[in-house]
Length: 338
Image 1 (tube, one colour):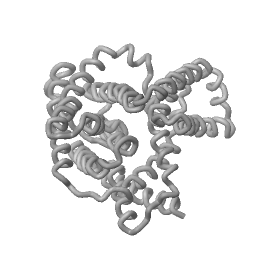
Image 2: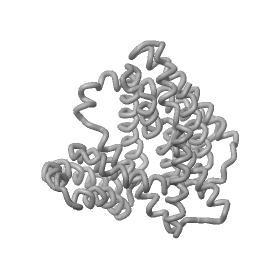
Image 3: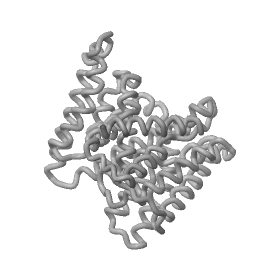
């Protein structure tokens, strides 16, 4: 019953959001907050929310093609480094200076650093901006941030010596998957139910292994995605990803008692200023200064990863970061229409 209510409510929220031409992620969170206020705890769907995270990050892994990175690595490195310097280091230093311990400062800085590739790339497509030069810069930034995401997840996951051993085993498993991916690709070319069952099973297995070895399910999923990059199963994966991710955001919303504290306002200001300053220098050194506003518009929105970080590593910051997601995703969607 809970699942039916969540999926139906998410569908209504998505329809309204698409009519307004804004991302549905804030709407999913607001629906969850409303259900939470009404007394719905939705504990039965927590596992499906985890599947949403896993399917999203598996999808991200599929979208990190080594060949593309090799061809564009210079531009990717230049724009990504500028973005990192303006959007990760300042909040990290600022939070540490105002009294947060290094771990909490690192988690918060990581959460607000990474833009939402789901929101920003979807806006580029909807606004028909992919043909412009600045759009390539935005896409490369999303790829760079996804790569940094892997590194951050590794750092958060490798907290114990035993975990490092497990991570080495998982890396070997990913390499083995990469080696046998041509054989898996043959199975994916069938015209029966087998490709869909495999598409659902692989990310789900990564969640099982992550819980078994007590390491980050996010890292596991993204490594599996990179390993199976050649499979071209994006389209089959999308329905699973969208449904379970909507469930995750609604479930996340039930845990949020939203209020704009001084910390959330500070993080919103840092998130906006960092992307604005970074966009200026990225445009100046990669395309032209006239593209700075466009780069800013299509990198401002934070979304899925800003929510996932506290869900995985620091639930106490869920409310604070939900405010950042709601503000930047709605503002990004509106500014992009100007």
